[in-house]
Image 1 (cartoon, rainbow, N blue to C red):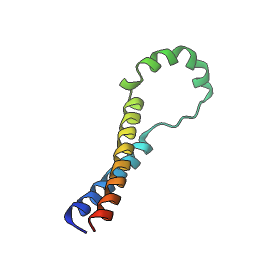
Image 2: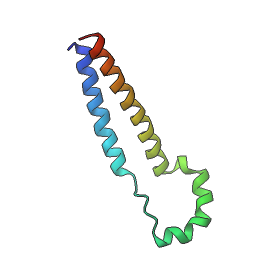
Image 3: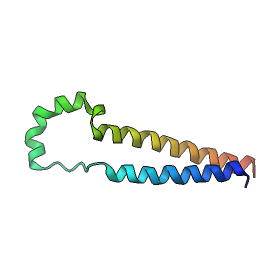
Length: 84
């Protein structure tokens, strides 16, 4: 393994750990009775401004980290395959 592969593995481990923490920080999607009652009036406001809320930001970070994870996996497999 060359230095670039080792660095790639460390970056992948870092991305995995951050992804786990971000997913655990997100609120659960359980709909309680108060959410059912209030969802009609609050859904329009939070639906339009979802990206400004903490939940929306965490979802965006999760999406980008998942994409980075996939790209890193494919990149490391290709590096190990063509540059052993």
